[in-house]
Length: 205
Image 1: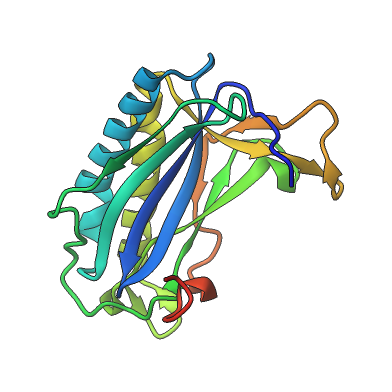
Image 2: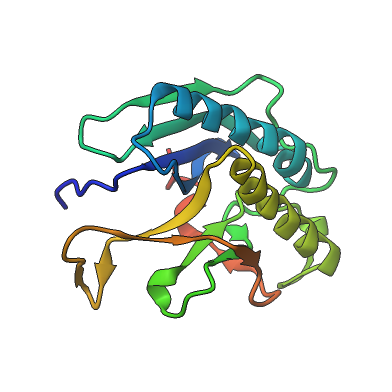
């Protein structure tokens, strides 16, 4: 697909490994102006702050951050930066790391109806002590929801809005370019474990 600009939007990729397999989360933030290198640096710093204080404590020790990669989608040749992680940026949840594909899906809600107005984020890694067979434990689920909400609210305190960027509607590209929906709430729709098969051994190298 040819590049389609998303004015004012920065794409953030949280890149990590789990059991040596490459995994990532991708998020979009609206700067409400053409993003600058200063914006990207501030977004990177905010992202690492939340990862270190709220996300990594809930992830098993086989989740290791590699870097945070940020790119302005304002135009095809817009600014981008990559900020490497520290050697200490490792999951610290005490427990047995779960299989790579086991995760929980966080639903990103905007308050608007329609599939285009909702997004998803698959948690980077679980420990076996955070679920029973196929079901998330309530405390673990709620802790993860709160951690994802912190990513939204902390960035918003700097003026950056976590957004759902919709390029497609009715199976076709949107006329006039993408439409943005503000993420206003994060939740888990059910407690059943989800699966990310692309994170299985041999698929993420």
